Length: 69
Image (cartoon, rainbow, N blue to C red):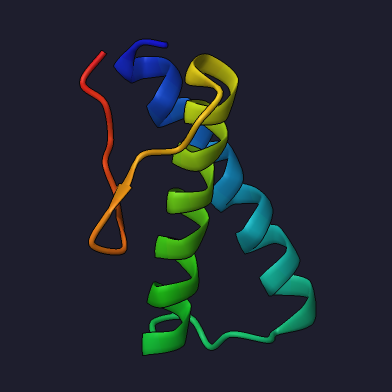
């Protein structure tokens, strides 16, 4: 997966979240919780990418190790 594809996957996931959040109003835009949940969504995208490509997720000290290639 190239950087453009990863960026696209992140953008689409965050777009879906924003669409949902705009309807539900669960997270106040700009709040700490809003930023945290968006970070969790980006991490989830990277977990999914690693599972599809490598069939495992690399985590060290509680952080996802993002592969360069």
